[in-house]
Length: 288
Image 1 (cartoon, rainbow, N blue to C red):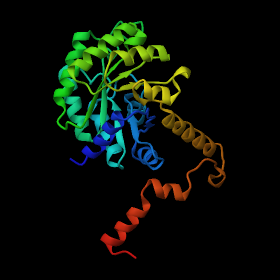
Image 2: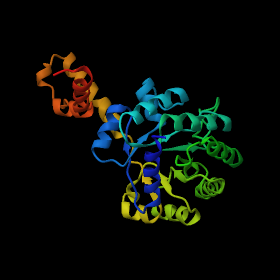
Image 3: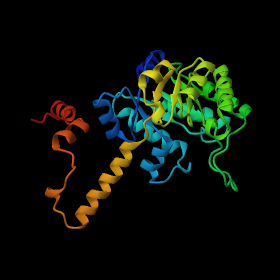
């Protein structure tokens, strides 16, 4: 399988002792930019899939098929090892198994499956809620059974720390570890003390969501078992702002030559792999 080498690179990072900040990507060009800049891992989130595919907020209206198709486009664009947020697996445990199969076929190196009740049920007026621990265990078992390439990383994910407390987050992590997940992704962890409790309780690598001000020391994170630390999804937000400002300026009469912040011809040729297409044009079409 030509995707296996990427998965093995991702696993090597998990076996190391450093925390990696992945590059948030959302399409072929952003993935190539992240790769060219030296990011070891790309991150494609469900929320970013909703934005890039549907122009919709993160309300789980994106389908598995749409998400997997966009993940495939990102994977085929280059050689970036891609971590994806597969949300709740798009349904129950049977859907989770299908989710793993589709995303593995799309070429991702790693994925997370979470234990939040998604989409928001009718009548739920408070914050997010969690499925039961037993159902969460069933989903993780199904995810692992759906894996065909043993190098694919399947990580459990829980938001319990912010919903039901740190003790529940640790209990869920230990249960998912016992089933066999390769790593655990946590959101709602805000202090080194909380992280240390988690690190002492489990023996698999840790992924963290948004890193607050007390969790910015990469050396400390690495020592406590964190291998992936997200920095949010600024690239797509910056891109949205740039498109808005450029169209607004053109609508208001600014001449194209006077626009600022526009990619140079050299950058455009690099991200579209222009030199490679020039080579193929000459080689396959006998063009001078």
